Length: 47
Image 1 (cartoon, helix red, strand yellow):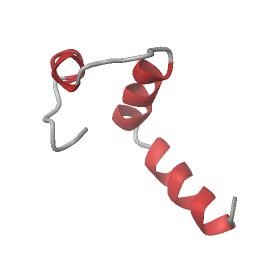
Image 2 (cartoon, helix red, strand yellow):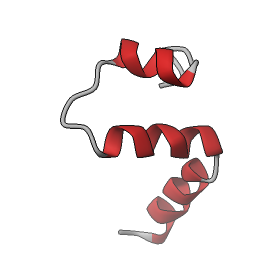
Image 3 (tube, one colour):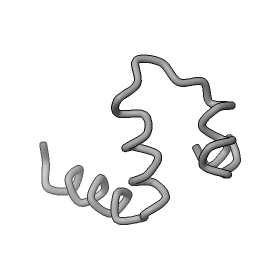
Image 4 (cartoon, one colour):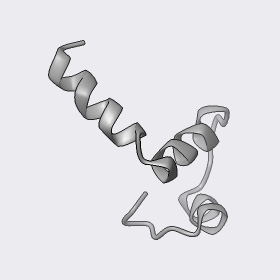
């Protein structure tokens, strides 16, 4: 992984909401967007 790629990923995961979304989907084989939107109270566009 290039340094710039790592920096972009690290910056995205620094946001607590984005990190919570990643944690939620990491353990799932499949998770509908609608379900995730309801759990995280974010819009589909944010996801």
